[in-house]
Image 1 (cartoon, helix red, strand yellow):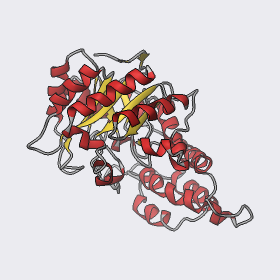
Image 2 (cartoon, rainbow, N blue to C red):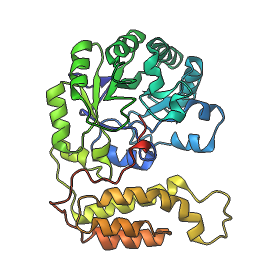
Image 3 (tube, rainbow, N blue to C red):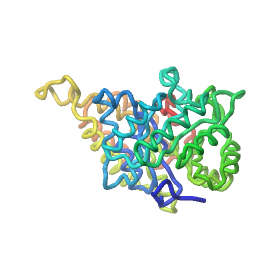
Image 4 (spheres, rainbow, N blue to C red):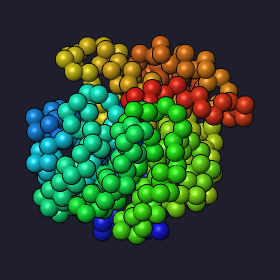
Length: 352
């Protein structure tokens, strides 16, 4: 199995999935520090880069010392535009360009982007080729098994992308029509790896919730890397545990949540269009609101998680978050009877 993507030899086979509203700089940095080998950004609009959209440019922020290599995920459907966007990404420090060819959301697919590229392997291959030639960077891609059950063309996509020079290919073994419903068909990963052999690495993705799931995917499908999305939500320590490390203590969990929150506040900055002299609550509220989902995920599997999640929705200031985190997490123990799939996650946000 290869651990190399382009010129980069990765330290292990564990990759954080690019998830919208989750894979921002603070969470990526935590995952890297916990042991992840690669943490691509959430999907970034090529058109947003052209217009220097403030929100889009924020997505490009990264920690150059920790995020090695820095993988930038782009989405778009026009090859020349994607190549120009990739060149801009390189100027911001990108070392790998990842192309989203799996996002099932209509606002993405109707522009010919995301999983719409599954319907046009030639155009998908041209995007890879043009980005590679324009930037000189390794180009990876993330696909699904196909548009729908009647059009599962993942092998055709792999051939087109491989011919274009793709450096690695991630596959989520559900169709676009499935979205996030049903069960991921890991046989797709097995078949894809057998098909491409050692031409380029295959990254398996889908329904990896636990350490055992990740190891099982690696062993049964023979993929080169395992991409972890749901299993990392509120649980960056999964990457440490995958390498034999310990689960977090209550004190460590609390310290990590607080560190993540403080870095999240810095990353988000104060609310826009709110004067500096406004009360702190007004300046902090957008960042606090965005962090609520992380608090709910961090509480998963702990005694009292349900009550804590209900309380989280009432938090409106940084001071209240710190107080609630210290009160809950310092004394929280793992609830062995907690359901393993109760994440309270809207997977429509985890694009691709």
